[in-house]
Image 1 (cartoon, rainbow, N blue to C red):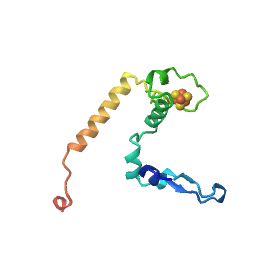
Image 2 (cartoon, protein in one colour; image 1 turned 45 degrees about the vertical axis):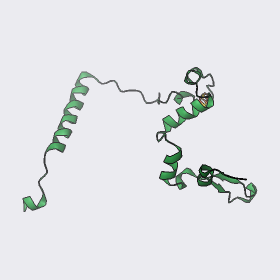
Image 3 (cartoon, rainbow, N blue to C red; image 1 turned 90 degrees about the horizontal axis):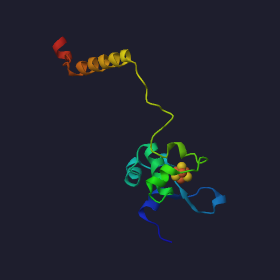
Image 4 (tube, helix red, strand yellow; image 1 turned 180 degrees about the horizontal axis):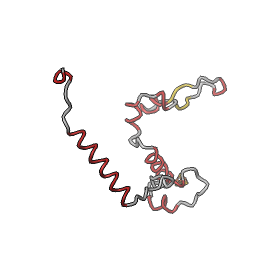
Length: 120
Ligand code: SF4
């Protein structure tokens, strides 16, 4: 049996006797990140879920949109966004306060720091 380069890098012989020497997927956290990123462009789990849904629907985005499999754990995330993390609605006062904070932060970054040799 021949294996692709991808399979060789991402699979390993199972250490469990019950698997009878079969290949199993490596734990993703044990695979070097440069190898993972070579094969999986989606670094964002939501994009990965979206990709899985597209795969499930033969790359037909309209079918993903219409998916009726509400028991599927991916269903709420199939559009590639997390609907449980709603966009915050800020009051005018909150917007102004945040704008001022951002401006202060940006100005602080632009202000040259005094080096230790200048202080001494
Ligand atoms: S949510 Fe629908 S499209 Fe996505 S994986 Fe599940 S069944 Fe497939």
